[in-house]
Image (tube, rainbow, N blue to C red):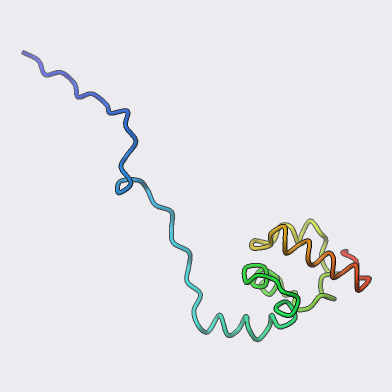
Length: 100
């Protein structure tokens, strides 16, 4: 007598068997100190840490540096969210600074 092929289960894999996303890369204390030494103006305006890091990584250290880039480029920075962009646009308008 021939064996029947095993039925494929239509159940979802259990949580323990599901592939997991990679954990975020931890930022070392040295990196945090580097960011803190460069993001002072961004802290003063109230930007969240991911937005501050994105700006520092793009070598944008103060509001007047934003005239070097376009709004589309700012939107493209990883870590910049809607709130951060809206805040920066309001500050730039108040200081009469425009994007490139």
